[in-house]
Length: 588
Ligand code: PEP
Ligand code: MG
Image 1 (cartoon, helix red, strand yellow):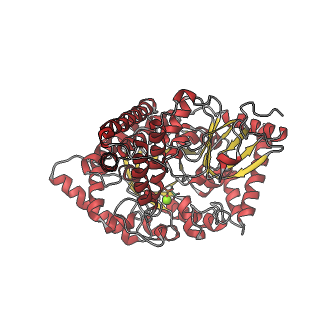
Image 2: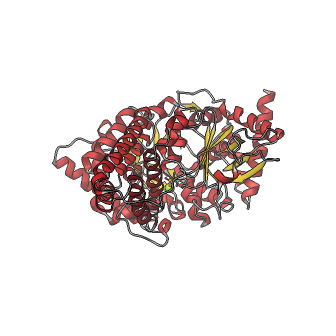
Image 3: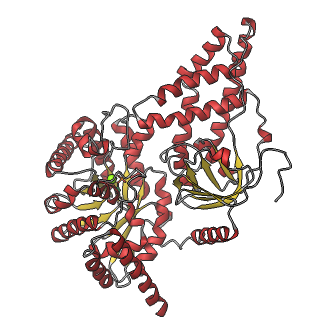
């Protein structure tokens, strides 16, 4: 193998190296690594600027700040209008122009004579330190954004030459961490994937990578030191694996896998039925009005889940009724005449908003409907906004984290009170707006027949139902082997809720991640699921899968699955069944 002509420490590894990180954005990318090291800056030894030159130094900072804002705005202009991208980039602009930070930088230059890069670095450091100390996980994660902005500003001040940036087309970026605007920037320059040393799965950079379909693995410790610049790397964003200098069989294996994943099934815009004619709806789960056209272009029969709390996570306060009304109306109007399911704010647990109580076990605390019934003022505002947006009669209301019939009764009372207010104010709305509950706690599943008397639909949230049934944190790697949505205990609860729904004529839907596990689709249809809600990109494959299913076979599969005592047996059964079905369809 050739040595690096540039004479750096780069030497290709003698054999392939496998690194484990966290799966942040699914898919496979293969390319040459471009390793971005932290800027090589010397900020520790500096000499005070003479008072007469400080105005000039302030101007030097302001020029760099202007360039930074221009690059952020350029990212904003080129950002796709899907997902949370625009709001994320806007938040960088807000941080960079935050008067608290800007004023403290200028004060450090004017009064202490700090060089601009030192003033920037220390001012940002103070804020980063405060965020790192915060009890609020959301705030702690935001510090990565400040770190990146600091890095960029310092690099600009040290006049790092942008034209010297390496060629990145078809490359894999390896970096300590990345901003969402970096992800957009590199995407526009043809980058194939990302590897970072730090960052949370919920960081904005990961959200943008997922929206753009760019494979990413995060949390690969010392990646920028271990991975040589220019080495060939494979990013397996579905399993959180990075392979450096793959051997020939590994490369062939991943290239085949990558090709298989790139063959997207054709979009089916019409509603589908099973092979023997049972209609099954396939809805999209979305966050924002901008996601609706994407969902419809993927063939969504409606919107089965709008996580309205993402609006709160984005703006970090509870928006006014009018602000919410505009948001919900935009969703309902863009999807019209298709149905739209607005789930009321499921805040708490890992979706933290400023001002919420700090709890030792937030997943078991004041989450979802519990929080809203605790803060009826906020709940009333949201219900008013949703009801006003229901005027075209395609809106449904979905209640998260329900555990008792009392919670449903209290909510129904509040809905009636809000309707009475709207009547008194002569504000139009859908008087028959359907109300449903999430079945995502064992209590909700076991009391399903009582809930069924008062709701029009159930939406099963298998992510939380699994977490609460198996007492396994859905966000923890350590109990990932216990967290299995096909565990027989979870299946029994599904079956129990399904039979209550069937006997009371309540529609039964499923919006948890299990809906995307296509090997389980026939089992779920056999249990009685009449509609699935999945991320838009999963819709075509799910519709194709449904068309191959025979309801009678699905029923016998359920009978066998419910006799199993272990998750592994259920998986084996589904595997056998899928092999048998594919043999049969090959014979036909
Ligand atoms: C679920 O719990 O399965 C669900 C769909 O809701 P979320 O993932 O938003 O908690
Ligand atoms: Mg849930």
